[in-house]
Amino acid sequence: MSDDVLELFPPGSRLDRDGTVMVGDCRLDDVAAEFGTPVIVVARDALARRVRDYLAAFRSRWPRSDVAFASKSFPCTAVQRIMVSEGLHLDVAGGGEILTALKAGADPARLVLHGNAKTDEELTIAIQSGVGLVVVDNFDDIDRLEHLVPAGRRQPCLVRVIPGVQAATHASQATGHARSKFGLLPDDARVAIARIENSPRLAMQGVHTHVGSQLLDVDQLAEAVAPIARLGTFDTYDLGGGLGVRYTYREHAPTLDQYADAMVEQARALLPADSRLIVEPGRSMVARNACTVYRVTTIKRGEVVHVAVDGGMGDNLEVALYDQRFEAGIVGRFDGAGEQCQVVGRHCESGDVLVAGVPLADPAVGDLLVVPATGAYCHTMANNYNGNRRVPVVFASGGSWRVVVRRETWDDLLRRDVD
Ligand code: LLP
Image 1 (tube, rainbow, N blue to C red):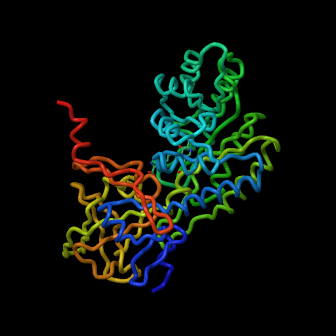
Image 2 (image 1 turned 90 degrees about the vertical axis):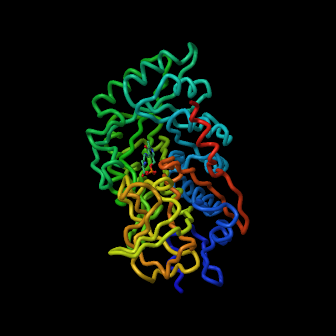
Image 3 (image 1 turned 90 degrees about the horizontal axis):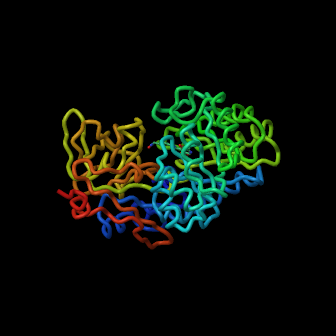
């Protein structure tokens, strides 16, 4: 059996002697036996290593750079805590992510707050907790901040700029085009910058841009540097996130070094040498370092072989919303061979397909099925469709495991339903 099948799993994953997939030196069948299914299993040490590699990739090329993990890609305290303990900043989208970041022990000065529709409540949380950078997305953010920042204080800000880059990704994941709802077009950004520079309550730190998510062409990411460089000389240039990852055996994604080379090459050409660079990776930090284990509940053989599992779009919306392709395998027989199957979820919708076509080796009811590369945005977008109880997150490391987000209970579901 080839180890290539593990290329989509966290680095360090292996097959046990009987062919069972092991992540963080834990057998996935043992984890499933303890926590039930579906369950998201994170390779804790591989994730921490990735964080260190990210920081080193940028600091070695541009010493004054910071990596701010995009919390939205895997928003839970335990993941944020890893980022914080490895020296990262955190990109937080809204009040909720500020609160989990603080619970994770983040220094508020190392938080970067985003949002295209920030409320007074969220900005108040940000100001009161001392969030380091508020990314101004629109003129109302400026009005609100001027009203909410107490006299004698100045809130450091970045201005989010639309770079005018049409990214080759799913339309819902592209944010850099002229019609984007995020940020300001360069002419408007100039006005916002002038307002902030003249405001007694705000401190102009720099500019921000983000082209989109799951970009497999690093040149498109680097294209965003020029439009923000033209806006002037600042202390900080935040280049957003967006590096795409490999989800299937057939795909290829740029390496971290290729990405850092492309970004820093543009920075060297266009930005002040003493400025501070920030990047905000989400997906490329976490995607590969987790997988989801399901149990096969039924198999139906018609024109298509439907292998149905006990999860689906309640724990992974990437397929239904963004046409993302994944791979899957039976936990003890993950060898990439077998009959062509469609892995479907348990939800009442035909779009609830986890993998449209994948070879599975003798799938049987009761088998465990694993989908690799589910670390990004799956836990994030989990939902209660069809009374789904959101799934637990388990950290596996050195042969032992611990739950960091427990499974939702029936009681949890009923608790909010107050009348
Ligand atoms: N910075 C900003 C301002 C962002 O809006 C995002 C992602 C990131 C950084 C991180 O991007 P990444 O490195 O993860 O590509 N719900 C979609 C993903 C939307 C991404 C939103 N912004 C999904 O499930 O695929």
